[in-house]
Image 1 (spheres, rainbow, N blue to C red):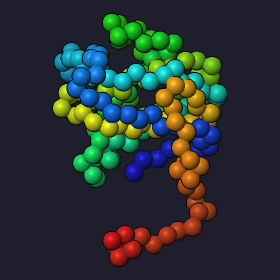
Image 2 (cartoon, rainbow, N blue to C red):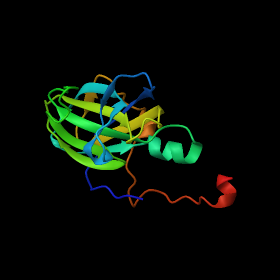
Image 3 (spheres, one colour):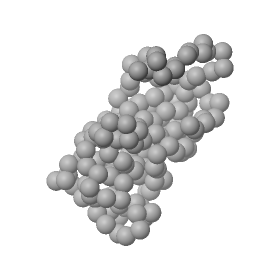
Length: 166
């Protein structure tokens, strides 16, 4: 598991889609080891209403592990604009799995979603962004209220033994 800070999350959105082999190519993150282009989706602009720490979670990794559906992705975050010909300009962070990033209110951010260092991981993806402010923008979908929340010690404890989970 992973532990989040005690920040109360006011905003929670999902960006999702499907990446195909014939989608536009863009330079992959530097940690991939070799300079290579991968299909990508550009999502944004996305804005937050409060400056603070936001968590970006790659939900497709667990979906892929448990169901064989989905893809392992990375998200590169750009402030102000994204230039496909200069992928280091305006780059704020490259995120993988579960990462924390500081976002400023009133600033446009663009998310470049790509397969993780391979052209073999194509398919559906889902990335969740949550933090202290409202999150809005092109491609950001707010989930239903029952799909988000924070567990606290005063919540009821359930018995999830093997017999109950099947």
